[in-house]
Length: 575
Image (cartoon, rainbow, N blue to C red; front, side, top):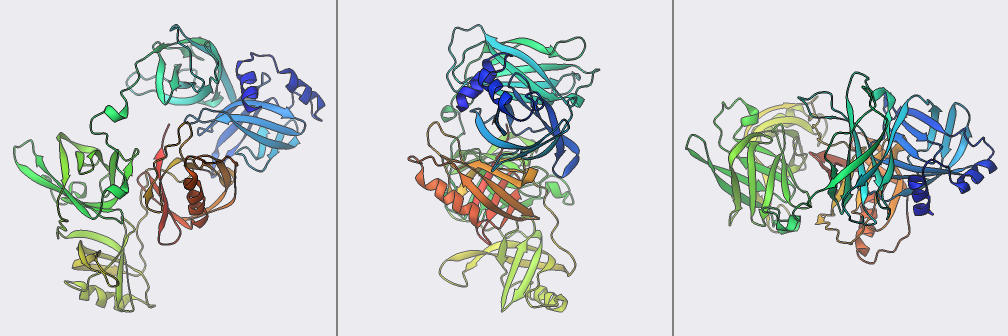
């Protein structure tokens, strides 16, 4: 029914389907009362609105909801079926809702799941649409999974990039060109003094295989709201497996701790060495030569923070004190390629290959650190602010001054106090068990304060309204290989705190509660498809979500914790 419904609405022209008309006639409300635009404030952003639009030709449009696209709608007695999709997954997704209230001004929707539950008010002036069709001249048939991606942009300024206004993704579902479309946008986003155009692309197997090669102006300056677009075929990109420096790497392949080092050739002709230490608790320390004054913290000779693997293990990302993360290409399992010295700044004229050394080089260079220090039962622990990682503190060097200051300021045993110090990371025998562990060595104690805490980090991605791709479960890399299926992911929508995602073979949904960095999931349900190819991922994924108590975001990596241990890690993906 899902595919048939979507095909009927997307490609059936402007006439309403016969079955839909019968359903509407049987309903208690006039058949045209639902048609129009309904809006509500965006949760936690009362000055912004989101909207849903029901057109009398069966098309369903979304306004201000950029994480999904509307496709079709149909009445079913007091029920409502809406069909949506996303840019990453163009296949139609059906949501069933019940209509609790429908008047000339108010629409209230309910259901076991779905983003659209809640109360909406009518505002038929808030949304409009551009219609048309997309075709090409090549004598090539489209595969069933091809999708048309449309984007409305403001191109008024020739000296600046185009400004995004709205987008739409149309699944072809086996249909061939010409293919009709409707692209919805917020009416107040259009300035009659500006110039707007629509771009189109046909995406096949994740690659844009057809593109518009001419401008299609719309809406203002006498331009229409109906256009017929022609796209032109382009050569597919070279497969990643044949591109240089695009090896994939798993966390398990690193065998940490480890040191990576390379030679920097300055433009002055002088040389310097760059050393990178990676630790299994996702901490990095970086030593680099500088030519700028030492009071410029961005150009400091040292940096430290959190690391993670991104883009399917093809990139190592270091989130430290620099304004932007360092991004290193994975050349092979033993080598990373560094492109800049200070995140996105100071791009190197010649990239540096950092090769793994035979032994760990725990360079003892003192580094300024801030964190929460606590001492109890002869055990000292330092939780560093930038990384939020906790380390035992070695009772050597200037440690005694730190302990004395702590005992003089604390009011209760084990109370964490904000501390600044200069120190370095070293390796010492474990207090329990065999082997070595990383510890903080205090080279110089600075200050301790009772009424201070670590500052908030500037995360590059937001917890909510972000597509989070699953990369690890309980420290093990997830490399999803089930052909023809979507990757495991998570999406938290702030409206009514709804959770949705894909486990690897089943879609799932539920609710979530967030309070500061506390996070928990509840009322979870899922479809019941069998998982013959990846049977364990779903079970472990659901177990991790159930165990989640709080979260952390470093750069564009999300970590879920069950207390002290990370149960899952995700990477932010943008479309």
